[in-house]
Image (tube, rainbow, N blue to C red; front, side, top):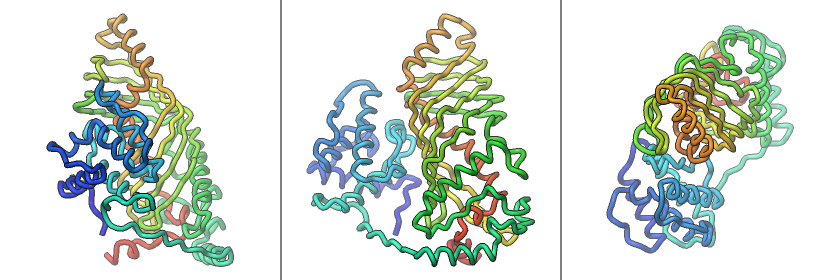
Length: 406
């Protein structure tokens, strides 16, 4: 039985904490779950217990950013140990207490992964990890199945598909993949890359959906305590860069048909009119005017949760949740008219933010991620309510197979 990690579960947290300190051979100290783990020292010692020397340096005291480095070193160590990247929490999830259940999920995952390491003889956490059960299909079986689907649905044959969201014949640019095919991931990766390119030039029936440039009437940004405390909005925003999206990998879960997509954006640029009151790091920010935000070298992992439904005799995706994790190699930003137009303060603040882009980007990461998630949620729902799921995954399950007969 799978554990549920949202909302917070005190029993799970206690179990995780007991496991951590059992591995360390220590007693659980008094204090709140998140407070014990927050500075990353315990986590780094745990990583070194599992793999000696995996964390070279543990910061015992210092600034928030120095302590955050402990958490980042732990994340890097457990990724190398084998914890799936999508199950590793973001730094702000723990350090700013934004998503403590994700921290718990990550540590449960780490506990399971220890079972795959024969050198590990410590205590167990969670259920025994099941062995992988792979199914293989001959090329003839795959072709026969694809041919059957093509006859039934007319995929890539130009057959009429009228009445399923506005599209007529199956578009030539759609590349359909079989999830049972061992080569599904490269097929799906190519398919989504083609789709991104087509979205950049426009899709008939989706004329209102433009991804580059993308125009947004208003984005509201709120953040509470932590390195960032902001009440801000961005109006008449123009986002560019998605036309140059490189799809690195696209995979679909055969269990619930949700997506994990890795993409690379050389550059994303957001311009608009901002109104802001708050602070980033130690810098107070108060102003309104034009702004520019330009991250470079964005490696993005997009997790897309879906629910299948049927209409017009076809199966469609309803995107219920998007979650984004990302890293960048550079950041340029500009806020005009800060501090009521006092130029000396405005220029020095912009200079500081750009010179210290790494800690600034780390502090802003939850806000940037939430903004991207909201943008992509709207885009994906428009696409998937218009385009049948069978176009992309031809052997997708019927909703009744997944959820039972309504």
